[in-house]
Image (cartoon, one colour):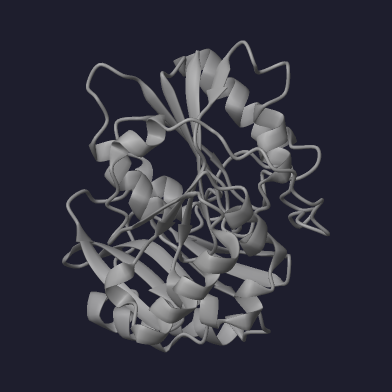
Length: 325
């Protein structure tokens, strides 16, 4: 029997960082697996989790919560049959709706194999001041489906953020557990909490991926002698544009960080090779953080997400000029 947790949260709430923290606390005698989905096609989260010590399956290019759920079922079945994990952590895209995913995991076909434990949902209180976020059905229903809500990035909140959070708790918490965290550092024992929140969720109006990639079950790869390629994905009112570069490509790290901080997008993330080692970029609303990675990735990947039209060609031209070779 594999115990399962959903780790949900809207764009930029810190899901992958939380996963990395949890995986660092994995008991040595247990086998864990990760099923991760991203809105875009590039597969940034998979690159960050690749050396986590857990079996990993990526489902990029849209939402694995879609009605038919074929990519989700394929990825889930492969993990269960090939790895037989003791615990499975599922990270849906921040633009995904939890309704179909929870229903699928609770279906009779999986009941002999899965035990669905607590759903943990991350909330950055700064999002509560953004009307576009709070009006988003996925944001609302991710929180509504949670057994435990984690107020993440608490070190970045100001007095107004805390007031908005208090108002939200009074209106919507409904006696559920709420904890605060910094950098996704939560108690791993939260994973063992039972699933108690079984309230019915509304049918989402729309959450499908673009048709070109809705059936994909692997991250984007380079073809032939190509040194790089770009991928676009659109849906749910957002557009993702990502770039993949081969392992021989190196970037000017300082110039890359400056470019990222000036990019007019709501969400940015990347894992890139620079002349001074690997660099992880994580941006939300213009606030871009950089982290040096101990392990060098096999290639470079970066992805930007925005809710308004963006001149991707201009950003691409600027990015290409930052290559050192």
